[in-house]
Image 1 (cartoon, helix red, strand yellow):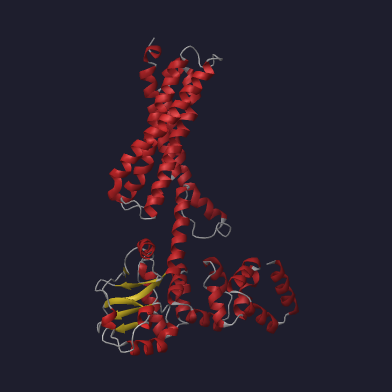
Image 2 (tube, rainbow, N blue to C red):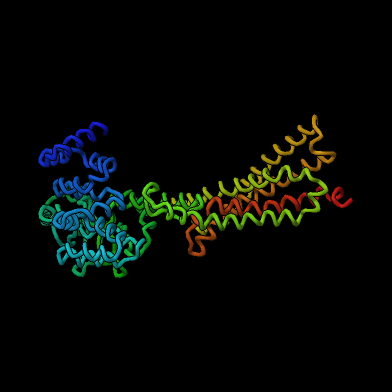
Length: 457
């Protein structure tokens, strides 16, 4: 990369546009993208200098902030060329991110047919499959023979997003079946399309969430899937490259939410500092106010703490153990839901597993805590005359708190999903805070039972 940057700088200093164009066009698309990252101030010049086809391929793999910055500085001719040559799905993705006035200006660069197509695609919900689809596909009729199909592919295939799969429609545009290209290539030219149809059709609905498409692609090993409307009319196709992009965005968004922040709309280093603070401060305030309940809980048990002050030694241990078990369970369930391994209907199976695992994990930690206190008491009087009862209190409390943390962490994402909310909202910090407060109540309640005779003297 350093060598490329040096070479580019030499060409820029010499102002030799012809050599710069030849050099840029000789590089891989990914290399040009890296150059734009390294020399962002020259990004518009690089896109302007590249051949149109290569400029389009570079532009489509840039992140949105870079696309927005570059497109504002391009000549009208280059903007028009880019917008018209961008695949419809990439064009829609760009338009959906831009402000309304910017979209209106860019749409003016499109041909009447492309303009109608772009506006149609933008009519779908932001996170719907309709926003991902492209209308560039090969469709044939069931009464055609293979020879006619191949002729049709030769004529229109170059404009198709993919020709791996051919779609069979009726006269009204209703999707009947899909046929892989290899099946067409391996039969006689006179074979009818209807003879190749098997009825094993997998399709997506344009109004469904994009998350659904991720799961369908994962389960069916397809490179492209057709998109239909409520009347089964074929509207377009979604290809796996778009799904991989969406899956990455979904994963990133979930990780940010699990960490206790709103999802960032831009790369971390590009987002405005005040916007970053705004994204983070909401959850921090909520968690801070929630954590204040821990002091309220401790005040409620103030008399017990005054009698056996050693109980306070283990408050951090109790709170962290419950929070950690809750965070573990929450992260595992959110991930399992994202992968389609767990759904809301599986709540009882999840609960049973978490009850058993919570009991076992709690028993392990409780045993360690019990023997740790007992061992320390054998050569120190730090835990006072009631060290055995304190050890029992801590041991039993850890069982209860880890069990409660596991249940809270596993059930909250499912409850969120059931209410139609994003499961990732039940983030690890949120679960940890909930378990912190309730964990103290469990701890001191068990202390009241085990140390009852001591506390009521």
